Amino acid sequence: MTVTKTSVANDIHARLEPGEELLRVEDLAVEFPIRSTILRRTLGTVKAVAGISFDLRAGETLGMVGESGCGKSTTGLAVLRLIEASGGSISFHGHNLAAMGEAELRPFRREMQIVLQDPYSSLDPRLTVRSIIGEPIRVHGMAEGKALRERVDQLLELVGLRPEHGSRFPHEFSGGQRQRIGIARALSLGPQLLVLDEPVSALDVSIQAQIVNLLERLQSELNLAYLFIAHDLSVVNHISDRIAVMYLGRIVEVGTSDELKTSPRHPYTRALLSAVPVPDPTRRGLGRRIVLEGDVPSPASPPTGCRFRTRCWKAQDICAEIEPTLDGVSTHIAACHFPESA
Image (cartoon, rainbow, N blue to C red; front, side, top):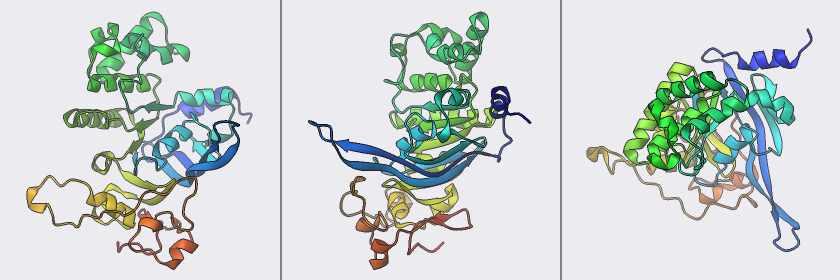
């Protein structure tokens, strides 16, 4: 059978059943050159993402958590081809996005959208809300005129806003409302995958809960897959089905939300969990707070072997010689030579 552009488009726009594999990333690497300020010579390379692999199924939320600078946001941008990967494959609906040119990639843009961290800077202040949400629909030729207006009204109501809000400008809204507008814009093309890059970190705590509840409702109604990127492990634990913990460009542990919360296997995950505030006063102080010593090494010159070993209280000679991998057959795996008991 001859594969045409139309058949490919029909294939990727078909909705998968919950649990079917939607995205598979293998050995993803992203590097940025370090250049001198005068002669612009390349002095070295920042290994922002150093060969990570993960998968995401339809209707699932994969949380990605770690300290600032660990490569979370870079991973999300690379998956969407908003920045170019240095190596690896990005398979969406069975098609390798990393090997595509811009023309081939265009039909896939509809299916993968992003919600950015800062609702104050991610919306064009010169455009009305109706124009902001309607622009992707118009650019992709999905609707015009009355049909476009009706589609924008439906999207506004879907995220908890009113159709009359469409005539206003972004500065007339609160932070939480602006993030709802950003979500409506991301949903305008009917995507199957949303990359949520710190979507609630710039909001007040009470508003964070509202946005998280909105995302959970939308996922249930629209069968969306989320790559949820955040540094707040408590938020990630609440919304995610599985969690990938990143440190210095590598994934060091993967498991379900319950597995990571109750029995973390990697020392870095234990340290992150120990820093999560406990709301129950009777339980405060029961768990030992783990304070990591030293600074995060430079991604331009990461440590040999295990990247976490320079801050790990369990490190031994083998940790400097051999980099641990995420090999395993269970859903809960950790890249550590001396993991905690499951």
